[in-house]
Amino acid sequence: MQRDDPAALLFATLRETYRFTIGVLLRLSLLLVLAVWIVPLSGAAAPAKPSLSNWTKAKHGKVLTPAKAPPPPAPAPAPPPPPAASAGSRGKSGSNGPAVAGKVAVFGFTGDGAARVQQVVVSTLRTRGLQVTTSLRPVDSAEQYREMAATLRLAAYIDGTVGADGSRGQATVHVRSGVIGRRIASLCFSGERSALATDVGNGLWPRTGPQLARLCAEAAKPRKSGRGPMRINAGTPIEPTARDDSDVPSHLRNTAKDRRKEDPFADEGT
Image (cartoon, rainbow, N blue to C red; front, top):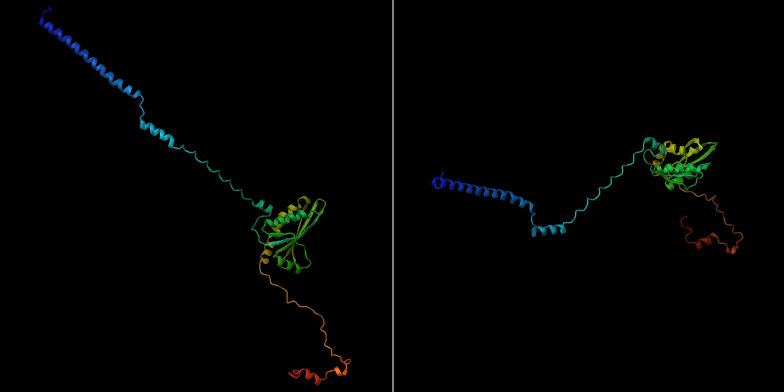
């Protein structure tokens, strides 16, 4: 091929121009791809600059917003109610059945170990709701018991004796009505001396409860006075006697005629 051939020269020129154009386009495409890939990465990696408004909000939020107080502790659960006493335990303590309203008097017990038995009797009666007085003394007759019961509103009187025979003991409890003033029941308890007071406490109310409840109901009713009008025996009346005026001088004696003159109303009513 000759160098001065115009066709060859034109072909060579076009080929160089094509190469140059292709090279430029490739470079531009590569730069465009790099620009699209690098710019988002740099934008995502760069931290956002806080604005003044955002900083002000954050500052005031920290100052004005109070910290939340911890929730109050939960209230402690209420303790469970005590278990109800069984029928057997109620029978041993003598507290089974409804309470009784009334007032009774317990006299001093006599005998060896009487103070302990009397204390158990008083405690048992008070547990049942009765008012118990221990400051009274026995009187002599049923009428006096009735009068004292009516004055003090007593329903019954209780006294007792305690005895011992070796290791065995015996207690007798007497119940007297305040309405009629007479003894209506006597209860005997026997057993070991060390357990005698406990036996009395366990058996007193089951054996006397109905009677004491009845006596309290009777004592609450109005009582009729059994006394009549009071009469005073002044003795034998003195018989009137005629006045003996024999020792009076005759000039000082008054005749019937003279008495009429002195008493102008002597003839009235005759």
